[in-house]
Structures are given as C-alpha cells and as structure tokens.
Image (cartoon, rainbow, N blue to C red):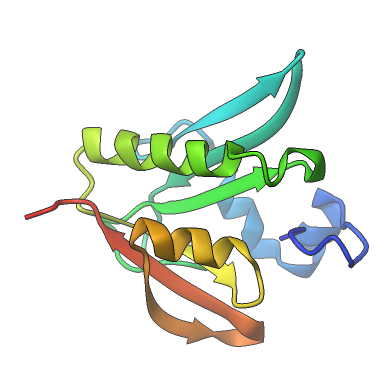
Length: 143
C-alpha cells in the first residue's frame, strides 16, 4: 500500500484504520495456504513476498476464487530496482506451483510500476477495482 514514494508513508495502524479488512492479510498467519519469503541483508529485512488463500466471505482486495492464493510483496525503498522483487516473485510463483495451486492473484494500483513486472511474468487483468486498482491473475498450470 506504501508503493508511491512521493506520498507520506502510513503506518500499519493507519492503514488498517483506513482499510480494516487489511488484517485479513496477516491475522492468524500459518493456516493452510499461507506461505512466503523474507529477504534479509546484513541482518535487516529488506523485502517480503507472501500469499494467502481467502474465502469468498472474507476475501482480499485481489480475490479471484477460493483456489487461488492472493500474492503480496513489499520492499523497503532502497531495495527497489535491484532485482529483489523479481527474484521474490519468481520464487513465490515456483512455491505456489509446487504446492499445487492452479492460479494466483493480486491487487495492484494501476499507477504502480510493479504492474509491468507482473505483466511480464504473465499476470493478466481480471477487472478494474475501485480507487485506481486492478485485480490480476496468472494460471500456474502450463497445460
């Protein structure tokens, strides 16, 4: 949510105050369908990518269906443009395939430059959502 460096960064408390449904992305972490990676440099976390399954009744912003986990990624500003996001995305897609998921989804601001990365990997737009966001998905089964 804090991808645009020209805007003031909001704390997690501020973000969950604006979007209370954001707690769905981390509350009760460790259930079936939760997995991800953290990248550390010199003992400091600089990036993370994760996915989580949602139900139709308690869905995420990029919900497609109950069989498609929703992907999320975050990098500290100084880690951007160094290939870390590309490596995280690639590793997470491999993990989702290995776990047998048929597809994966995400929500991204249309203006977010990361959207081009997702398109290069094969994500396609499902729909335009409110407030300038898109839901995208990618088939993980090559058949």
